[in-house]
Length: 371
Image (cartoon, helix red, strand yellow):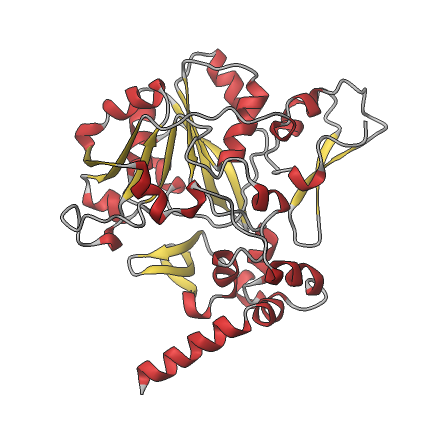
């Protein structure tokens, strides 16, 4: 065989790499740094396990939410150190305290985002924070299967396509597996994120990467909590491109998981569009949107309610502030232009050309506010 799925539908979930008995599937990058599977033909035995386990070759199995909540951790430190209310942190702590394991995305030096197996409560802090680039699932699907067969309680946190990938790899449901998908706008490549950072800063030592702080979207690199590099949203070419869907994977623009029906047991995100100011007047502290999509998700959530402040909401309110619960990000003329001119131009130059009017408006507003 010479292909696993239609290339524009590939999500890069890694199910094919994990299931190949010959280790003949590897990843190669396109011009934007997005990773796609490549089959080493001389090693391939035409078993077709990779295509059979590819979620893009099958209609997604989705579940409508049983309940919708606005929620946040009752631990203020936990809430403020999380991106959106700290619900993921509460659930992860519960699983690890039960002797289970959590798989989620961590930043790893020198500059990689990977899914890692966490079994120690002290390491759960590594999972905190939004990470707006695609992470590598590596061999975590294989490790999940081992943990499940060894009767560990397992929680896997990822984008909907990654959750679909691990489910397609496992082939069946496991009672001791809890899946958590994140409300996803789309995924840029890690390569583009690196391109947006001046090389002199990439050469420095840092161990923390952040896309948000207490005031909002704010990219920074830190080493032992000391600031190494910092830029605000108005000056951030990468985040501007992210929020305008400028350089996502092809599959993001036709994502079948961008709907109210979900692939995971629990869905988490920011509760943008919350219409009840009585609940919390300080959104900057973080409020999680929680969709409970299965009986397993409901049981886990019920067992953690005493750690959370909770308000039941409607799915209509959730959708009003999260467009990706209704439809995927749109491919625009800007995104098509970006693919034409990058990498023939430097990353920041290409973004600036595609979004020139947005940057001009931002500069004018900054100038007028200072006047």
